[in-house]
Amino acid sequence: PLFLSGGILIDLLISEKEKKTGEMLLALPTERQKIYYSKFISIMSIIFVQLLFWILALFYLGRVNNPLIIFPLIVTAILLLSITGLIGVYSKNYKDSSLIVTVTFILLFIMLFGTTTLYVAGLKGIATMSPLTLVIAIENQIFSFREGLVSILPSLGFSFVLIYLSKTLYKKDEFYFG
Image (cartoon, rainbow, N blue to C red; front, side, top):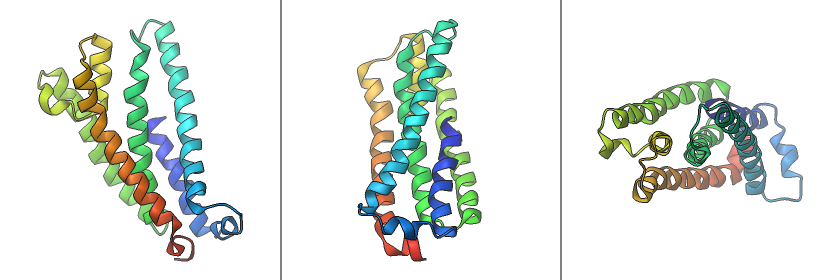
């Protein structure tokens, strides 16, 4: 659900531009940023329910030791959605957004899972940048509060900056009218 959800957000944003449905949204008596936030939060809610279902199912089946791994996965979801949200607001059409998303997700995949590999190899210093390394630490019951903060705060901070930028770009007339 994590990587697929970004495509849904981009589809919601780009289709407004290409189908000109965004102009109808402007007629609604609501702030533009609330429209963006409603799209973001609705997809985040779907991700949360899916993650909760899968983690509880895996916990019940004995594949997951600690359901608290949902927290770093939610942080990862927020990071992915904030990146794709900015790409969706910035891109002019599906073609532009798909190219940017592909390159960005490859780099993000390397960062998230590459650092996890470093963590497993024992290089914990740089590996704690990724919230996914916290999943391993929680599962192995070897994480500290400090490690959790180092793992989560940079991703959340970066995500909030991207969400702010997306909201700011979404509010501009250029988003709707080119």
